Length: 219
Length: 246
Image 1 (cartoon, rainbow over the protein chains, first blue to last red):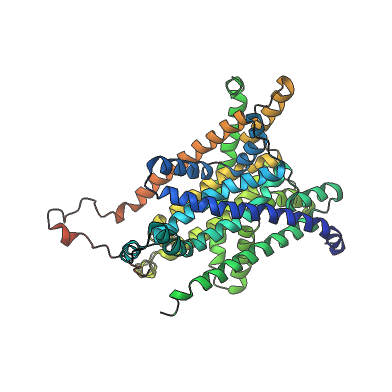
Image 2: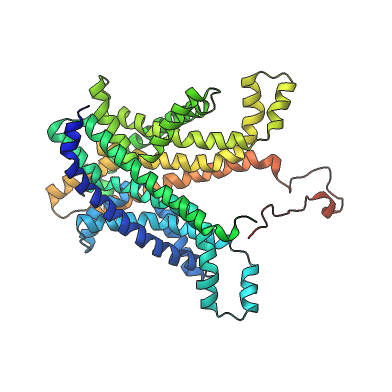
């Protein structure tokens, strides 16, 4: 292994990492919003919305992510929606992650006990206050471990986007291998970078979990 | 219509996808058993490295693993064709995920069971297979079925290396018709492929639910028993929520 070569390639890899983090950051943000709204719709009791959300979740989870990406990038333009590589990537990653976040948040909502509703009714809280100030914090706390898993998976799955030519970390590595044939060096460095990202994120998740659990600890 | 016109071409792709998925499922199961055995080795010096490998495989993106195996193996003198290369990398990835499923399932069986097996003098393998594993099945199966659908979906990664499976056939079909006739039929072909994969995964989930029901049978409360006819409140075990903490 030639570490000087890795040092040489580092600026390129960092540019790739920046794209990886931007795409997955945007997708994480959007998918959390879609996930919260979707989970709320799914438990709203309004049947058509429930079926629609369930169908969406089942379809995304039942089809390969790579085919979804190709459908969005190559298929949508002929239906009149032309997105750049970057925004196709964000869209595909968001659509995929949202399906999982909806399930995670639904699990979180299910973990909030029914007594809470009676409690806020007896305190005279309005429906919106009850939903935003009481249920949401409890549900978010319950959903945190599983949604953290999805967030980590979102960062990892951004690697699939090299298949449509988004210049992210994996694409940079494969591109350089095509010119220099330094496969071992390149794969070693991107593996280390991905592992660091995953460790950092899951460490952050654990810290957050610990912090949010404080009101319940030590009893 | 385009899809009907090239149905035999797409059907060949589907067959290859099924074959590739089957190899991945078998390989993944094999690696899962190997890794699970490696994780429970008595010596820490042996089980720690296995743990490290499993964690790395789980944390590195699958796309990177697939490309890594394809590009690195020739460097160390092993050249596999795209089919076996993708089969190997996805199997290893599936094995790393499956190892934790198997381990959690076996850990869920109370210790008393394996101790009783020993007391009855059943040798290690027999006792494990005949007594412990059937009881672990209700815990293992649900995540294992979703791993199997994950493996079927991951078989589409073969297209990145150029295996002629369903996704690759779709790509070829789209390229050829775009060149020959103009106007990309991508949304149609990819849409159809999405539906095919969905039906495939749905079928696997269906079979999985039947299997789950089979292994859960001994634990069902409503099955006919000699207690029928007594006061139901005495027969049924009251369900007490174990975790009442909110």
